[in-house]
Image (cartoon, rainbow, N blue to C red; front, side, top):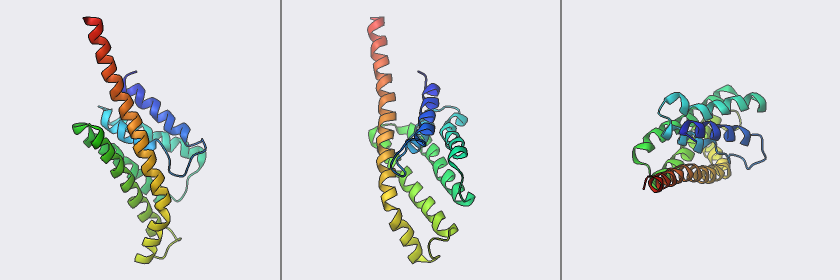
Length: 172
């Protein structure tokens, strides 16, 4: 399977994963965007998982557009994290990219909920309440992004090594 076929496949998984029971914020979407950013040589391909999110939102339902915009912008950042990652791709950099992705999502989306929403007072106390109440979601975001990034990058790189090894055996 070429890398574009793989990007289509993981985008499909991210799409389907939104309809299956799962923990809140436990999603392959964050990792699929990092992966797509790292491996898509054409930028438009890197946005395919984000398109999968948009299509799934048509079925699941939309919510306050300013907050949705913050969600989509924070997820778009993952593509650029992946772009930067491909210059120095190793297990530690994938882990760091995953943690940065989860942290950006947490800060951007919760700041948007606090600032644009009506659930919290618009002062530092309200912001801290918003962040504090979001910690359980942050934990699952971290867990899923690290897990799925490890699986995606590990499987792809492992398959490349296996392919190289098999080609070497065939040519010898």
